[in-house]
Image (cartoon, rainbow, N blue to C red; front, side, top):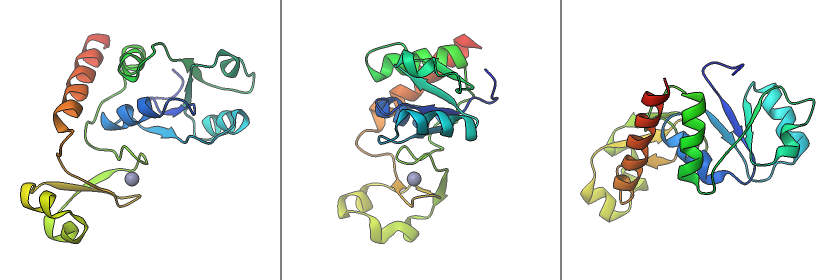
Length: 159
Ligand SMILES: [Zn+2]
């Protein structure tokens, strides 16, 4: 792996994997509308390994670093990437929508952005420094926490 700690750019079909990698705190660039030339240029320029399931793309001579992602569903794919690259994890530190860093934020500061049900139920919030999206341990938390736990187990075993 030429870039340490590992940083990734994901191919357009790997959006669900991108959200999972961000959830566990791995620096992951992703957009669903990049063509192959742009993917290669962006990976090189930003010093990211391009992850894809398109072998032809990996054979591009200009590409400096890339890897094939094994697995059909995003959980398998996550396991594959973590197992091979063992990136340092920092769960709940990145925005799953844009890859920005999350910072804790006071409830009063985001109060006006919350639905009444959320406002009544939760007290711990974080906000993305890049896009402003607000996060709290909501309805999907159990499922997400399970993804994080599995990721930590895989990386611990791979180290
Ligand atoms: Zn964001």
